[in-house]
Amino acid sequence: MKFPFLSTEPPVCPPGLLTRARELGPPPRVALVNAGAVTPLAGLREAVEAGLADPILIGEAGKIRAAAEEIGWDIKAFRQIEAAEDQMAGAAVAAALAVAGEADSIMKGNIHSSTFLKGLLPSAAGLRSKGDICAHMFHITVPGSERCLILTDAALNAAPDVAARQAALMHAVRLMRALGDEVTKVGLLAPSEDVTPGIPCTGEAAAIAAWAKGALPGVHVEGPMALDLILSAEAARIKGYKSDVAGDPDIIVVPEITSGNAVVKLMILGMSACAAGVVMGGRVPLLLTSRSQGAADRLASAALGMIVARGMR
Image (cartoon, rainbow, N blue to C red; front, side, top):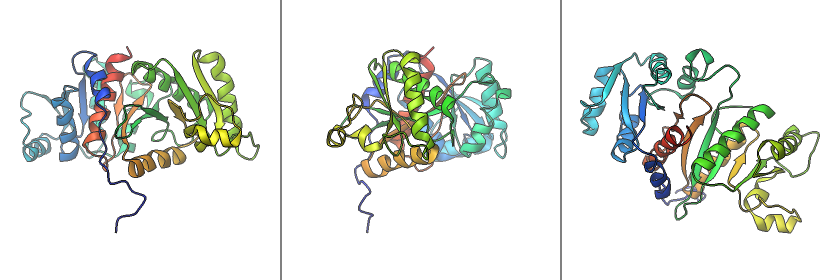
C-alpha cells in the first residue's frame, strides 16, 4: 500500500520558466561532467531539445557513446572531451572550460554531488575568488500554478553562519529579479518567531532581518519565523503575528541543511513539487539534480541554469 502522505500527481515543469529562459537568447554551452550514463545524458538531451543547452560532453568516450546509443541520441555533432570518470578529472576539465570562457554552465553527470562540488568550488579551480560564498537555490513550483518559491540553502552549505546566509539571500534576490519578480518577500526560517537564547538561529535570523533593511532596499525580510507563519496568513492571524510575508513568501532562507532538505523533499513527495536546483556565486552556474528526480525537475533545472547564465550578466 502506498504511503498516504505521498502525492500521486506527477510534477510539471512550469511553462513560464521555460518561456523566461528562451527569451534570453541562444542556449548556453553546458558542460556535462561524467556524461557516460543514461540518466544524466537523457536529461541533457531533454534540455537540448527544449532549446536550453548547447552540450559539451565530458567523460570516457566509450561510455558516452554507449549511453547515447542506449537512448537513441546522435551526439556526433557535439563537442566531446575525454576525461577519466573514476576521479575528479571531469570536474577539472569543466572548470577549465568555464575559466577560459568556453562553457556557460556546468551540469552534474554520473558523479556524486560531493565529488562534483569538491572539484569545482575550491578557489584553486578558478570558478570563484577566495572569500566568495556560493549557495544552492531551489526553484519550487506545484502543479497548476506558475508561482515559484525560492528555498536556500538546502543542498550545499551544511551549517551556514550569518555571513553565508546573507550571501545566500543576496543570490536568491538576484535570481528572483532575473525571473522578473521585483517585489520580494523573504521569511527567515526558525522554530519560533521569538528570539530565544537557547535556539541560536532565532537571534541570527533577527540579525539578518535587521541587516537586510539597509543592505537590500526594496526587499521585505522578516525573521525569525516558524514555517506555519511563513506559509499561512491564517496561522499568522490566529497567532496575532502581523506580517507582510506570511502566506505570500517569495524566498525562504533556512538555518541549516537538514531543515531545508526536509522542507524541499516534503514538497516534492507530498505536493508533487517541481524542484529546479542551481548553485550560484561562482563564475558560472552549477546544475545539480538528484538521481531520484525526474524529467520535469531536470528540464526546470536546465531552464534555471540558462536564466542564471544568460540573464544575470
